[in-house]
Amino acid sequence: MRSWLETTRRLVGRRVGSRGDLAVALQGGGAHGAFTWGVLDRLLADEAPAIAAASGASAGALNAVALAAGLLEGGPTGARDKLHALWRAIADATPFGWRGVMDFWAPALRMFSPYNFNPGAANPLREVLGDLIDFERLRAERPLRLVISATHVASGRARLFDEAEISLDALLASTCLPWLQQAVLIDGDAYWDGGLSANPPVLALVDRMAVRDLLLVSLVPEERPDLPVTAAAIGDRFGELAFTAPLVAELAALERARRLAGSGITLDPLKRRYAALRLHRLTDPALADLPPSTRLDPDWRFLTRLSALGREAAERWLAGLKPPANQNLEAEEAATAWTSSSSSS
Image (tube, helix red, strand yellow):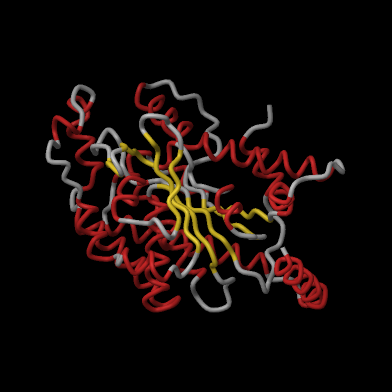
C-alpha cells in the first residue's frame, strides 16, 4: 500500500504557470495555522502568483476566510492586514490559551464534556470573527472562490460551504473541537471540526473551478519515525492520523486519475482535470518538532514566530519557481501554452 508520503511525492513538484492564478488548500492545525498566515502574507506580496481560490478546514478555514475578506476590503494589502488582525485578535481573546486549559484540566476533561463545563457554549472566536469579517458582504461580492469544511456529526460526512454560503456559524463549525466546544447547529444539524472529514478540501476546490496549480499548505507531519509508547504520545499520534486521513484519500484519488490518464484510458472531463492538476506542497520540518500541545497555544510571540517560519518557507518555494536566466524563453512558452489551455477548459 502506497504511503501518504509516497503519494504526495508522486503528485508534487511541477512548476506553477508563471502567468496563471493559484489555488491554495489550507490544512487545519490550531495555533499552527499561524504558519499558514505567514505563507499567505508572502504570497500576497509583489511578484507572487495571484490567489484565485482557497479551501480550508479549521484554522485553515479561518485563514481562507480572512484572506477573502481582506481582499474584498483592500486587495492584497488589505488581505495581509486582515490576516494579521485575525491572529492578533485570537491571541488577545485567549490570553492563557487552550493549551493551559487542557494541561490544567486534562483529568477532568476525560470525565466531562463541554456540555458540562461550558453549558453556555461560550466561544471567544464568535466575537473575534463577528468583529473582523463582514459575512454578508463576503457572500454578496465573493472576491474569490471559497470552500471550507465542517463535519456533520450524525453522518461523519463533510459539509462544504462555498463563497455563497459562508457564515459565522459555518466558520465556527469548521473550527469546533468537540472536546472543547459544543457542536455548532446549522439548520438543525450538528457540526464538528472540518479537519475530521476534509482537511483541507482538495477535490471540491478542483471540482468548482478549472484550477491547474494548487498549493497545499500542510501543518500535520506526514510521518513520525518513532513508535509512540506513552499514553500521551499515542493519543497525539492517533489524533494526527485521524485529521490526516481525509487528505490521504483525496490525494489517492488524484493519483488514480493520473495513473489512468497515463495508461491511455479515456477519462471524463473532471477526471482529466484531476490528472492535469499541478499540486505543490509547502510545509516546514520545524512544525513536526513542535509538541502537539502547542496547537492550543495562541501566545502572540509563538504565533509571530510561526508566521515568520511560514513566510520563509513561502519565500523558498517562490524562489524555486523562478527558472534560470537561460530558461526564460522556455518558461515563457510554457506559460503561454498553460494560459491558452486553461482559458479553454
